[in-house]
Amino acid sequence: MIDIFYENEHEDIAFTHLKAIDQNLTHKTFSHCQFKNCDFSQSDFSSSFFEDCSFKECNLSLTQFYGAKLRNVHFENCKLLGIHFNKIDTFIITISFKDCFIQNCNFSDLTLKASMFQQSKILECDFINTDLSGSCFTYSTLSGTKFDNTNLSKANFSFAKDYAINPLKNKTTKTILTLPDAISLLKYFDFIIK
Image 1: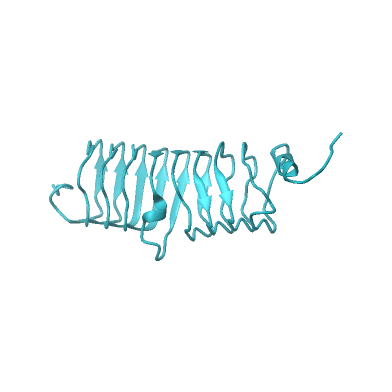
Image 2 (image 1 turned 180 degrees about the vertical axis):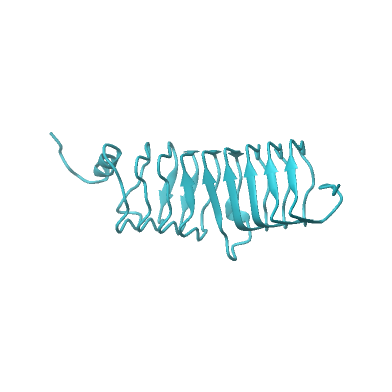
């Protein structure tokens, strides 16, 4: 069995029920790996490389990914708290989220075209100067999440709720919205609605 703590190269491995709290996991390579029901809270994956990997039912609270490469990485039903995604390697980022709890995470200054953030609670996160064109936020809750100077062209917010998107400060060409939450955009204009 390959040990995640001591080995640096991991390929086609399924890690299940792994408890790796506050561990140094820097400079490791994971290719075609699956992580299920693992706890990586407060661990450090800085400068690691993930390609074609999935995290399911994992705790990634306060996990560090500074300088990490994330290529085709999928998070499903995971807890992601306080992660600075804006510190990852910015060359070719492909990440997706489904049914996740994402809070106090920073996605600023990233190019995340056509990224998936489906059916997730995305609370108090930052998307500042982020390219989210063509991204999907369907059925997500976005309470306290900040969009500023963000490209939301053709992004899909169908059935999403609690978002605050100022169309005067973000690019919203052909952004898809559904009622009743789409009405929240009117508050940025000097309308009197009766």
